[in-house]
Image 1 (tube, rainbow, N blue to C red):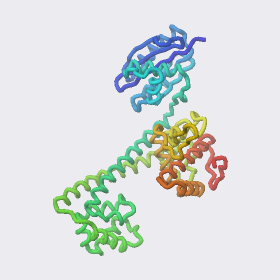
Image 2 (image 1 turned 90 degrees about the vertical axis):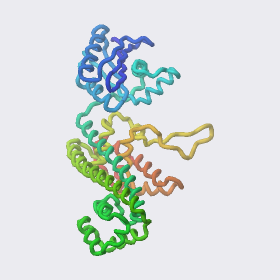
Image 3 (image 1 turned 90 degrees about the horizontal axis):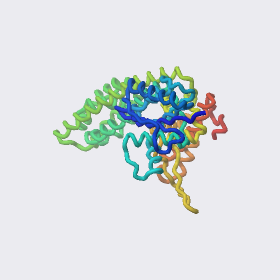
Image 4 (image 1 turned 180 degrees about the vertical axis):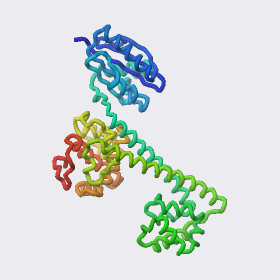
Length: 415
């Protein structure tokens, strides 16, 4: 049986640089060439690889690419699913760029950084073994990932814009934040827009304010008179701004409010699309109390094929919910940090889901409370991260077995 062909591909927005190695080659490549990173280019790559297969009778091909976001997606998809290389065994591997960077350091401390060198090291990494799970393509899952990542992007934008709005709001009415629990609610944003200054809010008629709150709050306030009293109390105790500065602050706040409302509208549209798309994918994550369609979709889309993980520890490492170790001789550090690597989007959805699950499920509520009581510093962040790590075990089990969650400790082997 012939040796395999190792094909390293350094991907960029314009070109794909290819280096082909065989098992017997140490440094000299069998073939090097460059193609465009588009459909004609990937078809040219197929023809060049097919020529090598016919000439050397390779029985298997291993393609390796760095995971460079959107630039490597098409290439990996075509190599895995749409191209025929006349070979019975074709595998595609997506490497974390930091893994290739560290692999280069283990061989050459001063290795140059260019596309040809990187392609060689990717092919060499394929030869070395210890490879990740092969790349798999699932159209429904990738489509869902586009939606959940768009939501993640908008949520981050919403947080940034909200923080900026809060800085201007403090200048306009410094005690306003003591009134509404949700500062970005429709009623709260309407109050910010309607009254030009804290003086105008303090001097407004109580009856008019009550009517204003009932209208914009859609009659959801249990005691609108009490809310009005709190608003006017906050307005009277707030700092005062000079007229010129007040005009600038109002303009800046109006701009932020328009952006926030736009983001909120887009989030509603994405929520509907995510729910509709998730309904077509079999899963049991939303059987966990506190995990609705949004969190289930976000977790599922980032994990992909659960069978690429042999244990929940591997899944936790992908999510960045694993802790570094600091030990030397008899010394072992009692406090360590979360690892810096991992999928930040998966970590975001797991942390958000854990925060929700601990409110709705007594098992996770008890676990969170126990961890919250342990440390003196960063109690909430630490307890929430540990709760998310516990949730990883449950997610791994549910996806592996396709079983429904059994509340109140029913899945005892997870405890």
